Image (cartoon, rainbow, N blue to C red; front, top):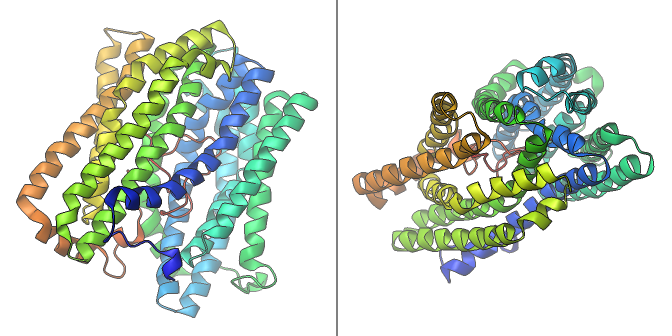
Length: 495
């Protein structure tokens, strides 16, 4: 047991934080790798329109999938609770309910996605030269979205009972298979965006089938019979109570981002593709800060539990220094090599110029998002997970949309749309910083201990870890997100 845990109440603080965060960061790099390679293959071997179609449609996917992702996280929470209580009967009923629910959700999402794709692309103001590719990509993706939902549910069941290795191994298989299929379908068979979509769908199904075997196959965790499969009322209510708030939050943030994408799309396929490339680079780098935030949460929580509150301030300071130094160093490299980096995805002049401009406008200001993430991690570690979630949603949904709506009338230009992201980061940083200073001055470390003890009582939602580092969406168009701490898709937030 000791070899699988990490005690952060002793030892050098910066080493403890790094040792905790590095496995999470490596896992995220693996998860993001095949999605980035997918975009590079599409952009280099098809066209900028295809790149725009594949990268910019992620907001549509996340808007629809976010709700179902939240429900799968709710299932993980309930299964973990019954597993911890050693209640075999309720555990069996919850797993049966989860699997039947998976079938129903898959059917609903497939129908809504396939039928609603034209309307959603219209709402995104998709340019005419991108529309055909985006339509094909999304319809193929949604036709096979049941593989994603099954993967999330099965990996959630495994993590709920303490098995984190097999979902990670399965993800490694998915990543490798997706890259190989991309090369085959796009480069060898010349299937264009349909090939890219098929590669994603088939690799997700392969991973889902593998995990299903681990859960339900011979020697699996549960012995399930088809005639016994049904929805049980009590587990269903518990799953929805835990998962719907998370899912609604994810879908709202994704829907908010569609407004930004819709305005960017009005500047043409070059700007559209450039924004998609920026989001890939942004997600790769910002996962570092978000995983340091998770490390800070764990560090603070452990040291409060051990009564070593004198280490808290130093832990947050070191965590913030680590996150800022690493992310800003990578940002500096990206800025200096912005044209070659963007050129990996596509060589079109519009994509290069728009992309370079977006990087110059956003990367120097990313420190605001880093600060908000780490301070939010401190609050969550102290048992206050509500405030970071509220501030993140307020900044990235309400205030960002107000900023866009008011300013667009005066500055209907790309630079202004892009500026809405740093605006949201700074709002979140200011709100979190001011609130945290007030909360710590008013509550103190003693109150943090009491609040933390209340938050980890059996059945507490915070105990299930539903908020993640910010409780918001990842920009992955395939829907596979960080799974280290928050259940099947509790990925790092979109900002």
